[in-house]
Every structure is written in structure tokens, then in C-alpha cells.
Length: 408
Image (cartoon, rainbow, N blue to C red):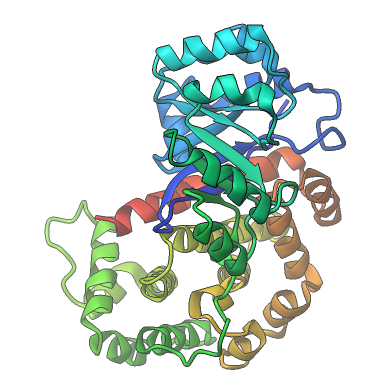
């Protein structure tokens, strides 16, 4: 038996990623209709938290937010794990009973961090507040305006922090920020900021020029070298990436031409992709860079399952460029016209159609933990579901390694 696990980033007011909620399943009508909340939690813990390495790979070294039902909390399941392992999310299905109250008090005394998930204001929960650290509001259920009144009431007289969940647009993020939310969950950071039409910044123009070159059938590395040579930051980033890959060499790679000779065209083409993407997100949340690479690698693996002899470069670019509008804050349709992309990639990005479009739909469904759609698209692609779960975790691990490399 395999398990699906997706993750959703949680950002602070500076748009820095501070943790990930791990999503095992989504409601009663998903891929695991016969598994109750306690079994789902136990499987997630068993698969990912008995190994510190597994936990770190899944959350990029950040804190994990894990759902716990009533039975798991009162039976003391969280006590089996170190207090720094995760933040305990008390599921919205929990009733505020005396038994639960005593269990929460004990966990608080032991130093665990506790959050109320999908909270709906109710006086019966008031006595729990001194032992709770975070209250999560699903803004699809409790409006930001209604949550604001609650925050105003408790922010001054308690140490509670407030998390806005299912924040999907930049506008929603700004509204939640303005009323005093401390943390934000959702993929709002992966939406373009186009409140007013922006001209491309110099760094974005450079990024676009590099993307243009690596999309060409025959890469002109002299031209790429000229582009990189005009930007000191880019030159540094490229050489740092290459040297991280070639750390076993006694002599470091000190020039672009050296890197080309050592890595070859395919590898260096990929490295230019990393560097260009990193350059584009300098004023964006780090999560956007990580998600871009994760989606690119996930798409590539899915494609290579169907076409084993293909390197999957087109699928990689499809996954990467699916967030191009967010990277450059420009309409995707206009950006695509500036790049020499194949018709297959353009069709996938603009219409979500064709084989690459189905792969992109599957990627979106997995990011959103929409398990019924994951099943639908995996069936359409004729890819085993357990393989898809493995590919997702591999893409998370792979992108995390590059995130850590770029932070050095």
C-alpha cells in the first residue's frame, strides 16, 4: 500500500516559508474512502517521521503542520515524537471535551506547538486558548472580515498567532495581511502580481533572454556566455551551481567555457535554466523558485515514464514555464510568444491540452491535493498511482537540494 502526500507552503508576513502542511487526503470521497482520520495520520507519521531524513526532505528542513484527530490526541500519539518534529493541528472535527482539554494541556506543558485547524469561533474553545499557539481560519468558510473581528479581540490580550488558509490570490493575501494575520497558507505567491501593468525589470529581461536561448533547438552557448557576462550576479550564480555539482574536482570551474566542456550541452542547458529562474525570483518568495523547479522535475519524470527514451526536456520546460507569469509578472500568453517553444508546449501552457497538458493538469491536481483529479489524470496517462506518489516525493527532494545549494 502506498500513500499520497502533498505539501502546501506556509509563509510569514515577509513571505518567507516557515513550514509546510502535509496533506494526506482531502475529505471522505477521495482515494482512500475506507481510511479514517486516525489511520491517515498514523500512516503519514509512520512513513515520514520515524526517519529525520525523510521528514527534512519532505519539508525542506522547515516545520511540518500535521493533522491530528481527537482519538490520536487523547491517546498521546504526538508524544511518540520529539516536540520539534511538527506542529500539531487539532482537526476541526474535534469536539471541545474535557478529555481533549486535558490532553492539550499536557502537550503544551511538554513543549509541543499546537494549532486549531479550520477554526469556527465558539465560546466552548475559549478555555483552550492559553494552550494554543496558532489559530487557522479557512477564509473560504470564515470571511477575512469576520476573522478580523476575532483577531482584533484576541491579538492584544493573548500570544496567539493567526493563520489564513486557502489564500489563493495576491489580493486575498494583502487583505489578510492588513487585518493582522501572521501566517498565510496557499499558492497565492505563485500568482502574478498584475494589479497594474508592469514593464519588465532588467533582471526579468535578462531571464527572458536566457530562457529564449535554452529553448532553441540548437543552443548558441557563445550568445549565452555574452548574456551572463554582462551580469555579475548571474555569472556568480552559474559558477556556484556548476561547482556544487563538480565538488569532487581538485580544481574549481572558473569560466563558463570550462563549465561547458565539463558538463556538456544538456547538463549546462539545465543549469542555465536554474540560474535564470533564480535570477527572476530575487524579489519573490523563495517558495516560488522551489515550486518552479519541483513542478519542472515532476513533469519531466511523468513524461519519461510514458516515453522512456526521451530526455523529457520539453516536459521540464512545460512545468517550469507554467509559473512564468508569476516569475515575471506578465500575462503568460504574451510571454510565450516571445519564446521559441514547440507547439506542444504552447498548447499545454495556454490550453492545458495535449499530452503535456494532461501532465500539467496532473501536476496542478497534486499540488492542490485534489486526489480524485489525480486519479483521473493518472488513468488518462496510464501511469501507476504509486509511481506518481514516488515521483512527487522525489521532485520535492530534488528541488530541496537545489534550494539548499542556492542558499549557500
